[in-house]
Length: 100
Image: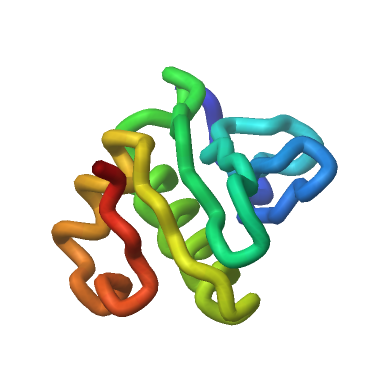
């Protein structure tokens, strides 16, 4: 089991993703694309197996969506994990555009 030392969440816009970081190690991420000027389309989320079961993916998505809200943009949840997370957190419905 990996010991968690210094976990934090960070935006890595040059890689178009939000990351879970354990010090210098990337423990997971949620990837996005920018289809237009008003949307952030989340397409994939993953967490390294050594970090599973600690609620880090949920914390990451919470961090990412709060950042999108702060930017004034809207969310498109193509990623199944992000879509599922939003159904459990309806406070983001006002900035979510469900994909067709």
